[in-house]
Image 1 (tube, rainbow, N blue to C red):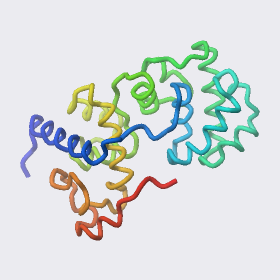
Image 2: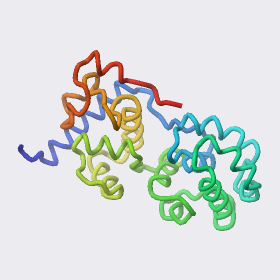
Image 3: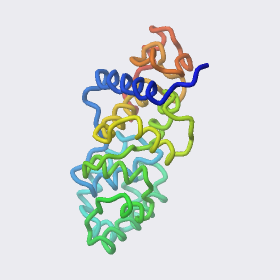
Image 4: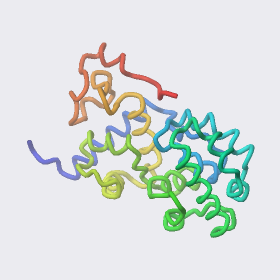
Length: 232
């Protein structure tokens, strides 16, 4: 098999990006939030959960504890009970209490707007930081969540399993001004079509551009039944 040149890979990536844009013209962050603080908390809660489930919890959470100062003083048992539907609630409670205290003490209750500052917060890695930077502050970043990692490898954009390497290699294929939409279009496609198990290859809009075509059913009728909205 011939090795794809960087130029050819960028051209193919651009075609995939455009086709996903036609398929998901409304692709956006599916975590409901009003500001950077709410998005940061929601992103922490989304680990090993779904955005839809997180969205059922956060309205009550923010009504009860609207800012870092309030959340830092929350009763642990009450907080655990409220976020229990998102799973791993004890660990997430610990993360939220430490995170809110750090935002309050180190940044005066204001979520910082740089990667270097965000990753100093307890429980905040590059992925979470890039979600907040991209969708709350408009700072371009590649969000290496499980969907983006899986699809980037299937698309042949990277062979790495290291999120930091993937972030750099995928970012190099696109203009920074497109990174936000790259995140959302790829993540939406991963949630709806290109599943970890049995991807809907026969109903995929980018099948003709994907080196992994055939990992899932290629019959259009069979594949169409696998297309789904994200589960709650």
